[in-house]
Length: 260
Image (cartoon, rainbow, N blue to C red; front, side, top):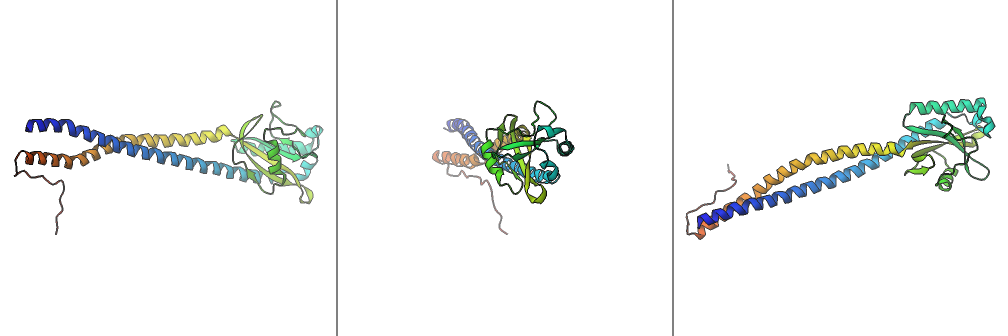
């Protein structure tokens, strides 16, 4: 009888302990995964907001450096050799050189048809450079025109935008000519790949932290499962003794408190 009980215990309790350990470990791992996911989503949101705020500040400061009166003189591609054009372009290139993640920096104005047209472009590559009077024809051109028509202060896109040059997160700021009239809009672009690279870097750190918790969760689950199964095992052994007629068998307490 006792031999049979011993065999049952040797089979039953380790299996129950394993099941409890797996259940507890799974619960801890799932909780850690949910927290990691929530942390990443929150961090990505604040990272994107920080980049947007930075874009707005850069655009606002860069716009203050544009000579509105000189910009107003630039009306067609023949003015691209003028002193005003060269001076403003040098200013934009200087701004871009100090901020490496700014890919494009340029100025727009509205033409008589209400379209956004390029005036200045800091780009030097002839294949990518826009010229005075070139109409912006991106997929979101109409929406962008409406957003910038009455711009009063620097703003930044909430989401990525796509055009013929790529996918960007952009910032804009108005600048003014003589008499306080808005002369143009300065724009600058950060490549979406750069933003996503920063987000992926944080995701990597979050995943590393998560996977580091997995072995600790497994050990904790096994230890906690063992702690839970011990009193059950003791009570079962005691009931087997009582059932066998051993009325003198006593269960050892797993813990005790001393009263002073």
